[in-house]
Each structure stands twice: as structure tokens, then as C-alpha cells.
Length: 578
Image (cartoon, rainbow, N blue to C red):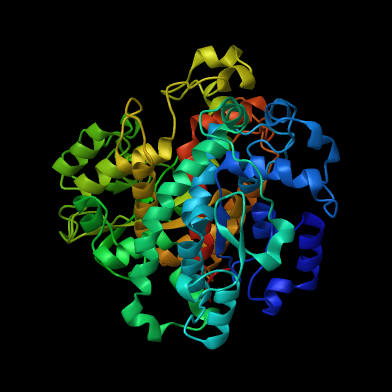
């Protein structure tokens, strides 16, 4: 239930031993991080209660609970309003625990969003005011067969089941629910606080994030009934799996239930038709690889790696006037550098105008024409526009991308664009700014990844539905790589692209460019080969970090999901990864 005990359980291999059916803890974030792993995942269930009701119960309970370490006899002579106005070490308890912040740290709206997302994706929620229904759902999740005599006896003993058959005496506890008389020690009958009373308002004002989270949990409780019942209706009760297999149905309850029930794609029609599903065979010849270049995520290094191997790329380089091929009406592949075997096509797919011009030239449209140059991959930041304009259901795009934590990406962009005078997006005003000053407010860009994936401008507000759509696009269409797992990501991309890693030249390129990406020593004020810069790192929890985290919170949530996908996709590359 506490952190030292969790660490001891980790050392003993509690979860991996499979010797326990359930783990009870007040530390969900800490337990999730330390006890579970990719092969032994957690499914959280929890009972929730109105934050004011929980606080009032704690106030009265700890006045008399001499057996508790947190016993507070000094509260006995206080009124609730006096107690509510005292400094309280447990304000916004639920949000603090879910996001893993200590009670000395303040939680804000960004933490609330994270807490909501964790509860939605990871928890089967129950309500103390709906104990009977909550226990029924928990039993389904845990694989409890309620028809068994022992199960019925336990249910009856603790006050559940048909009320006319339940003769066990019960006490009315503070929440209004019935508790078995044998469980009086942790139940305390006490006066209730009326809603909108000064006492209620005083406690509520000290727990604003928990109040909002609880309202969300109430809605989630209603939504999850259909989700739980969609798997285990009463007519199908005899087909319940044993408890050990129950997790297969509950890895992500909401998305899984909706997908199974509707059996239709949630993606935009063109995206779904023009991009190949991530589970399709990688050797399929009816596709062209599409690298979505998320800025400041190692994309330039990756492109140079594949040029080193002799790949032909379509990005923005081929239309550079200095090479002299940009005005030609036909398509041609050429080597822009004498000392590099890589080639480019004379198109610019980095902008809407360039993509339209490429399409007019017949780029990818007539890819089966012998005169069309061979293209190994295209690279662009324009995910939506390129997907719709360049690809078709007959010639699909095979998506892959490198990702990085949005806060780190933003910081890298700041330091880069205040020096990179050759870039169209160079910003002279940033050169005199400190990181804290620059990060203090939005500078024309927020949640870039989500906006690019769903095609929303910076002026349009984002919603949780937008985030879910972005996640679905990633889940179904992308082979994902991580900048902090660059070497493993390259191995996966190589398999997708059909690279022979045993080839001496290819192997030399891989060693050179993966070693460079891992190096932290690059430092220059001029444009360099790698488009990489050493710069001060932002400290997690600092003012700059918190501000950038809040500005890009939808991207932060998407990035967390992408990291999960990276490890889940390991199964697609089993036997070929490093």
C-alpha cells in the first residue's frame, strides 16, 4: 500500500510470481511504474467518492482512530469550517496520486488532463454511492463466477445480492451505503455536510482539481456500463474466461469496446484508404514508404542515413534551384552531391504548393510507368495533404516516423531557430530571449503533432476527440520510432524498407549515423551535417518545462501513447530487431 512496501515487492518479484489475484495500494502511479512491465501489465479498478464527502469522513475518522498512524486527536475540538481553513497536506489527493506528484507540489489543469486520461484508459471505475453495481463490474473484470456458492456467501456477508435474503445487520456509514457490522472499525457514522453550505464550499475550494476529476469519473461510470456488459452479457455468462485471461479483454476498454461494437474505421476516408495498415506485410510492392518528418526529432539524420545507403528520396532538396532541375516538366532522379551515393527526385513535397506541382508532374500517380524514377521514400512534414494528394488506394503510403517528447522538441526548436539564419523560420527576436522568457507563452505553435495529424489550424481549439483521432491514426497507420531509442528504431525502419544490414556499406552507414545521433557533443553556431545542436536542457518541473508542457499538453498525451505503441510494436519485428 505504500512506496517502501512496493519497492520490497518489486525486489521479491511479486507480480511476476503470479501468486496474487489483486494488489491493493494507495500509490497507483508508483506501483504501476515499479511493479509491472510489458509482459505483466496492470488493470486498475478503483472505488471513487465525492471529494468533499471523502474529506469530511477523514476528518471525523482520524479524530478517534487511535490505531492509525495518522490519528489526529487535536481535530476533535474543531468545527469542520475551522479544519477546512487549516493547511492541508492532502489537497487534490486523487490527482496528486494519479500523476505521481508529492503533496508539496501544486497540481494544475495539465495534471488534471493527465489524470483524466489515465483514469479513462486504465481504470474500471466504481462509485461508493453505487457499490452494488460497482462490485458487479469488478467481479466481471476479475473473472469472479457469482454463481458459485462461495462467491454468493461472500457477497451476502458483505451486504450485496438480493436484499430480501440478506439478514446480516448493517450500519449506516457516512456515505449512505450499507457496511457489514463486522467491518465497523473502518466505518464511522458522522454528520453530513450539505451541498452549497459554507463547510462544503470551503472544502471544495481546497480541492478544485479533484472536484473536476470526480465529475468526469461520474460520466465515465455511466459510459463504462455498456463497455463492460458488451463483453459479458448475462446470456454469455457461462462463457467467461478464467481470471488469468481476463486482461486480454481490458487492455483499453473504451476503444476496444467501441471498435468491436461498431467494426468500422474512425479515420477520415482518404487517410484510411490511401495509407497502408501497420499490420500489413512490409514486403507489399503496392506502396511507397512515407516518412512523416516531425521537426527536431532526428529526421534529418535519418534521411542522411538512407542517402548514405544510396536511397532515392523525395523531399525538398530535388527542387532546389541550385541543382538546375526544378524547372523541368518531367521527373528525374539525380545525385545532388558528388561524394554521396544518395539521389533525390526533382520535386518539393515540403509544402502544399510543392505537393500540387509534384502531382501535376505525375509523381507517384504514374509510378508504374518505366519513365517514372524509382523512389525509395518520401519525407515531408505535411502528413494530411501528402496523404490525400500523392497516394491512392491503389498505391498506398507506408507510414513511419521518429518521435520525441514535445517539451524537448520545443526547446530544441527554440535554440535552433535563434541561430539558424539559413532557415525560412529563423526568428531574430528569439536570439535575445532566455528560455524562460520564450516558454512563458505560446509563440505561434501548440500541439503541432495532433494538429498535423487531424488537420486543424493553430486557431482552432482542440478537444479530447481530436486526441483520440490522432491516436487512432498512429495506432493503425504508423510504425513508430523514438529518438531516445534511435538505434532500435533504425533497425525497425530498415526491416520495413527492406535494407540488408549485412551489407558492408549499409552497416557502415548505420554505425556512423546511429553513433552520431547518440552523441551529445555536437556544438556549432553554423549549419552542420547533422542539423543537430548542443544546448541547455530544460529541467523537468521548472517554470519553462511546466509552461511548455501546458502549451503542448495534447501532444504530451499523444507522445505517451506513442511510447506505448513503440513497445507494443516490438511483436511486429520479433527476430529482426537489435
